[in-house]
Length: 603
Image 1 (tube, rainbow, N blue to C red):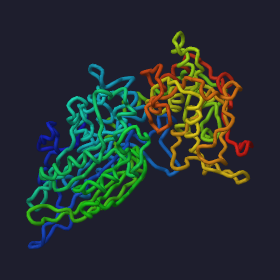
Image 2 (tube, rainbow, N blue to C red; image 1 turned 90 degrees about the vertical axis):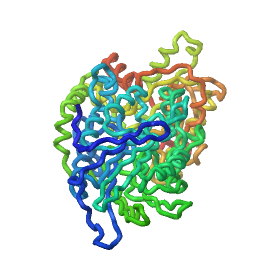
Image 3 (cartoon, rainbow, N blue to C red; image 1 turned 135 degrees about the horizontal axis):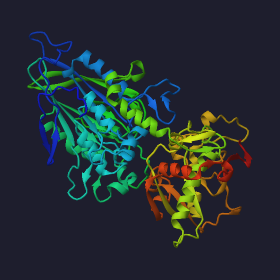
Image 4 (tube, rainbow, N blue to C red; image 1 turned 180 degrees about the vertical axis):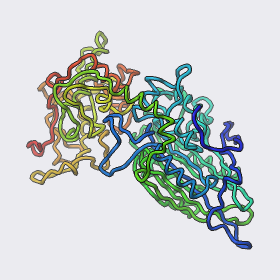
């Protein structure tokens, strides 16, 4: 059984919308340290407590990069992982008193590293007598009180998510994850926690969990007909007043949704993807929101609620366990109830502490198994290939992804009605540090090209639609006039477009004129040396995220699907390399696209 450092006097059941919800256990009087600033005799009763929060852990237990097979590092010298978070949590509990703290998470927990992949696919937790998921073991040991569902929780299917839920000693919350048939919550919508105060009056803290409506698009294959995901704002408006009527003195929302008010899936759903700020602004009765999903760091962001005029405090700790958010609450006893007097938020940096040796001991064996797995040799490469320049040049390493995808789709369509159509392929640069080394190639090398659990589909698009698709993709580049210097550090990610939302299409040739405005950049689009006929049909090998509308690329989500695979593209690449044995760019790479200005190549 996983180690659990929490000391419960018991677990209470709170019932909401017909769903039993695990509440946090009460702590003993000995555990509850008297907080600083308790009122003197005759003065108003006051109490302070802290809610700690993480988000977007993405399978990071240790400060380790399984794709590079060494300790994690980046330019900012950040550290990652729950082992570091555990040390920070212990320090906060020692300072505040264990009974005066809660620890919650805002989702995207079980996908992202080879550690989490291994226990989903290689040695799955769903197998009979299967292992306990490392993330469940670590979070149980640290003593999480609740966690919201993230969209990546659904990547491996509902059965694995349910098994993970069973293995957790804390509830997984999703007030807007509903059963498609009954429209009742498919997971606990909230959890209610009692904090014992030295004033003789318990504080009741409600944690409402909200997840991302984009799940209906991004993981359609897993959730269609089983679950639906209405908007965060609508569900918060339903639940918050009910939580208050249940006696909640404090309402904290854990939302797997960014704060910007934007969406990456266009108009395919009537809901906003990054809605945390809108929830704070429009739904009265919320005191604080732990924000997730956007992978940004927001120490403290205050939003004025348009109904009450009160400030709601938002905070988003940086992904992968790089930061721990602290919401510090100050309450005063007024007119027979606890009232929030002040809220502040800040973040702690995990690079300031060492890994908790208890977590290291607990999951050392699992870590070693995965290290051995990812270092299996599957082939050799005649040259080194890198993604370092892939955001602005057509590089062989990205062509490798597309070539494997195109070959796979072409073989799958052989003998079908679509076998005569040309097969193209899209691919993105997911990481600027991925490398296929010269010499031996391991699983981790190949997997590093594709860190997401996307699967492969084949969709039929016309030449005109492909032109629109490429024009949309080309908005990734900053406009640079002819003659102006080109700085690659400033050339990409225009309008906040992430690298994974820039697609190159393999099988066509074209120029991208970065001196032109967005929408008029694709020049000399051709197939096999002939200008593309707008009416001609092509098959596009495309990942399921893009095919489902991720990134809001035009046409592809509505295009006819002629084939789909259930295996991850990452596995397909690994199997292809293993079967091929030797990687030679001369066999699959070509310069299909380039950046130009007025016909002159930029590079």
